[in-house]
Image (cartoon, rainbow, N blue to C red):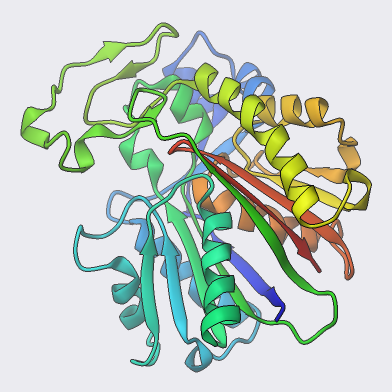
Length: 337
């Protein structure tokens, strides 16, 4: 049974932090230098009282309206985030209520960041192909800006907030749908990418609130998100190319069979390095972060929406999705449109 992505929409908060604003905070980096290094011109930031589930609900409402989807036909809600409303109850259950979905809907949170959309696609595919669910509402949202130290110039230039919504269902057309997957994990609880004080390993009372700086001049403390950018770069260039080779093999494809490559929109520097290493033509490699930044688990659905809107994805195209990041984790699949 084939399972396809039938529709995607996304939501961006109204507040915008552009490079000029960041340059005023960090005068050693000009606005042009920030864009040249990251590929990002601006990023959207939630209000203090707007959280991940709010963005997800707004993305879902936009999906229903934009694509004329009957919400009463939804049978399962998947919500991928690392910023839940509460430790308990499951945020997806609360979203079911807020969206006015039927009580016979399943609801589940998926706790993953940058590679979360691809992992969530695999869960949705399994629900439809293996369990018989008809329609899955897949939501992604992250509000990482709330977890970034005000003086962490590296992370503040990269990350933006967003929510995305996708409808997945059985495909009625021959050859259409989501292909086989590749997954990978390299578990790290070091300073590569971590938010220490949100779990039980480092309870808030046992975490130092003292600021410190890394070797690149970024300010942190244990109550904020920490990322070692150069370490993430090395990780991505080490793991993504063999993942692509494995993914092509599992889907019985070659690089020439792929019409468009859409990777997690980490930053322009990593994306360009991967493109060059994999020898992908620029016109088959989609980049979509200039006006939104790195939106974590929402980068891929936003990129897919924009690629289809501007005509980069057409009927019959094969699109390779690759994601990598916090965990450390990585995943990929190929979608036939």
